[in-house]
Image (cartoon, rainbow, N blue to C red; front, top):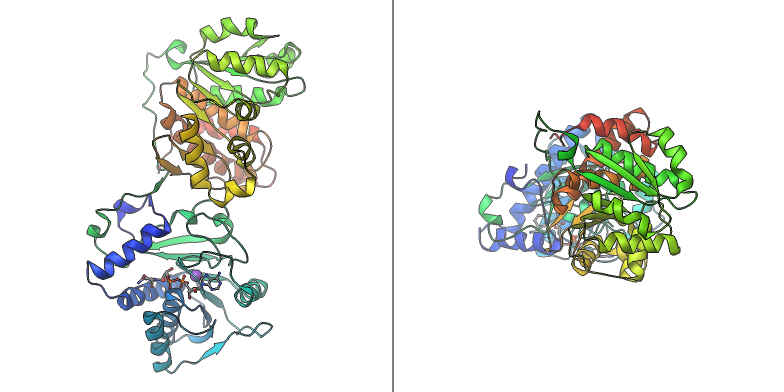
Length: 493
Ligand SMILES: NC(=O)C1=CN([C@@H]2O[C@H](COP(=O)(O)OP(=O)(O)OC[C@H]3O[C@@H](n4cnc5c(N)ncnc54)[C@H](O)[C@@H]3O)[C@@H](O)[C@H]2O)[C@@H](O)CC1
Ligand SMILES: [K+]
């Protein structure tokens, strides 16, 4: 098990590799001993998840990840399992050579993988092809093996990292293993929690290989997993004036839904009052649907000014559009100096007129909006979500929530949290409008920008997970409103 105090700390691949070296050089634990511990941890995970398994196939790459595989094969065979090993070329490191020899000494044979060859019959495939040493797409023979494993339909236990997944960024530059279970060693690598990791990692187990706490003492984690957080309980003598006043600005012609969802979410997150500034044509529908929202038709900045004066926090962008009306409201809202959350067209307008915020600000881009803000492509954003989120936070002096599986929350000072919750049912219209409203509602109740962005992202994802119990595929943004209310003061563990 990982040491409890390090459970929520995430590291870059370079940091984990430095920790490996430190364990060997400073603590004096030989690399081969670490490999043996890794193999034990993997075997115990295999036994726990597949107690009925009788035959396993272990796929070993050329490096130390393959070494873990050879040692696991030897241990598994000793414990009575039928084991076949498929090797991808020769062992390339000293410890991997020793591990391969240990497997041979145990009477095992290693068949060399030939493209087009048959896979061994197995109840479980063990993926020991590549770990943290992979920095590019697997080459053709490895890619063919990964595809064959995938096509077999047999569940996969991945050692350390599903092969082909970049453990630093969560990206898959080419073929990649889809594991049912991944058992990862020494310290949590940040790329196992964001981007394409969700599709590849399966159940993630961590094992610190029995290394002591002193190993981590000089390494500050690159990021953290979002943890449970609570708002302070609401005082019994609270009145609506003590819980802030959100003004949601948006809803160009034909886009009333976005601003309504945003406003409702701010109410469900506990804002005392929520006003909406939108096109006059939407007022009837908004009032009928949600009378608690104070909807105002505004035809330009002058009509917005008095609403801005009464608001404590702004949510700018849902359904805002990018025309003259939209731009005039956007500019007036930003120049008011009020704390704000900026989303959707609010971000698209920002990409045309970049600024550094002087008021507390939260930006909530999806990768497309982040790419426009950075002047690059979605692929560039996704290639390193951590760097993209940090660059935006620094450039705009704002807290940035980079949405997508494993949403990242980055602060201008470099802090970065990763949201481990949420589900693919949430990849649907209106979810972003809801997130904007929740974060604005929390800002209105006194959270600072970082707290509001972290707690809001967590609440939104957890509400999505609760709502998905009734069905993931057909999940609607509006379905999250009731669970948001039920989550109340925050996230329990
Ligand atoms: N002493 C240590 O450092 C420990 C390492 N451990 C294991 O060792 C792994 C890291 O081992 P390595 O640094 O040897 O790296 P890997 O075993 O992850 O892979 C490196 C090998 O793969 C080749 N390679 C990389 N990318 C390729 C590509 N795209 N196509 C084809 N070949 C490619 C490299 O040339 C090298 O031979 C960890 O993930 C972990 O599983 C564990 O045994 C625990 C201790
Ligand atoms: K692997």
